[in-house]
Amino acid sequence: MNRLDRMIARLTTQRACLSAALALITDIPGPILEIGYGKGRSYDFLRHAAPSREIYAFDHDGVPRTSWGPDEDHFFAGDFRQAFGLVLERTGVRAVLAHCDIGSEDEARDAELARWMAGALPDLMATASIVVSDRELAIAGARSLNLPEDASDFPYFMVRLPAG
Ligand SMILES: C[S@@+](CC[C@H](N)C(=O)[O-])C[C@H]1O[C@@H](n2cnc3c(N)ncnc32)[C@H](O)[C@@H]1O
Image (cartoon, rainbow, N blue to C red):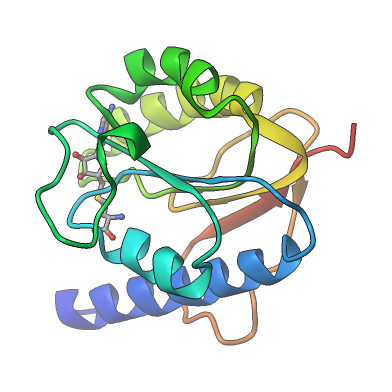
């Protein structure tokens, strides 16, 4: 597949999965974690689709300077592996949805990060919460969910954490 079509398939699938995940948590209160803020595209989608939710975003760089992005209370700058230790103290509550958009073109790096994420992320998540990810996360006890019908032909991953 050419790179343009690949990008379109990736983002179509990402948007479909995020919409499906939001529908699954409609009645469950709690914040969203956007892990891999990048240019804020999927953050902005979530912000519009779930305007009443608090969204906490994570990325290497400092707080993005936009009129619409997260403020400094809702942004964790630096490596995820350090930032995760600060999350519960600041949010005070576990998240109901995490979107991990963490991939790069370095497969070995991504695999190592996904291994770490699968172990560390559940500590930040509520029971029966949803994780949507661009890399497969082998989270202990999590149940894989089918991707929605409007997803494109691109690998993306949705799981539900154990109910408690
Ligand atoms: C695919 S991009 C995210 C795209 C974003 N969701 C969007 O819609 O614009 C992945 C992001 O993850 C960030 N990232 C990857 N590994 C990281 C790490 N260990 N700590 C902090 N940020 C990391 C990169 O800086 C990059 O911005």
